[in-house]
Amino acid sequence: MLTGQRTINGTKAKKVIDKGNSIIIDIRDPVSYRNGSLPNAVNLSLRKISSLIKIPKTTSLIFFGVSNEDDDLRAAVNYAEQMGFKNVYSLGAIDNWGK
Image (cartoon, rainbow, N blue to C red; front, top):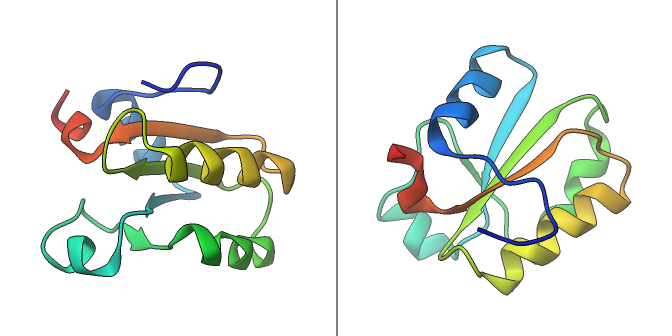
């Protein structure tokens, strides 16, 4: 997982999602997203993360990407935190959903 950031495994991510007021964000490229993503995930590239500014800062954001050490994933999580979101999590790789 990404060091220095709030990481979350698939089981805990599902619990956050079940509580409501959360978004799961796939930062992978659109082709990868179309080829298969997580249930109810939205696809936002790193360049489009700024569109999150429109949603309440109390929304829980769960990001995932290509790998546990994905630079775009790390940047997306950092950017969301800089925008003032308090509940920002990194699932790491999409494969971590089942863990």
